[in-house]
Image 1 (tube, rainbow, N blue to C red):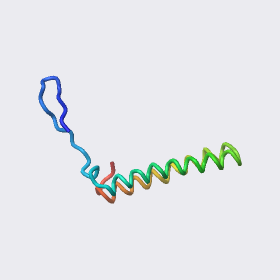
Image 2 (cartoon, one colour):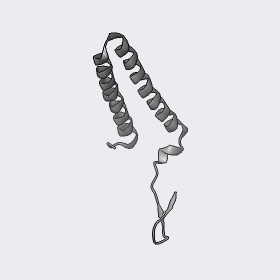
Image 3 (cartoon, helix red, strand yellow):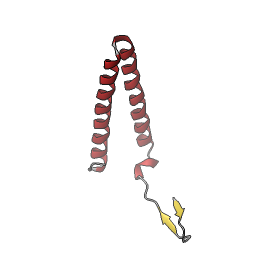
Image 4 (cartoon, rainbow, N blue to C red):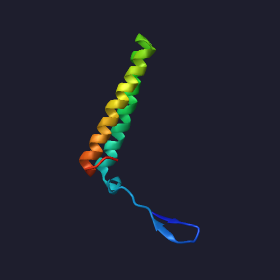
Amino acid sequence: MEIKNKNNKEEFVKHNSLETKAWHRFAKVIYIVLWIAGLGISAIVGSVDGFSYFIWGSIITCIILTGVKKAFLYVIFGKNK
């Protein structure tokens, strides 16, 4: 992707090389679906048992899915992002 700056010079923006891979895009979709499902289940349980269950369920979902993302990036790139 090219971006023109004030001096009309072209600068190239570095992109993630995995964005062109179908499996990477599919993994991102699954990641988003897991967020929606985790928060949805927390909301359903919270509406039945109490608001604190929703809060704790959301916190646990956040911790688990953040860990999954960090592990995925570490395995693919070999570093933390």
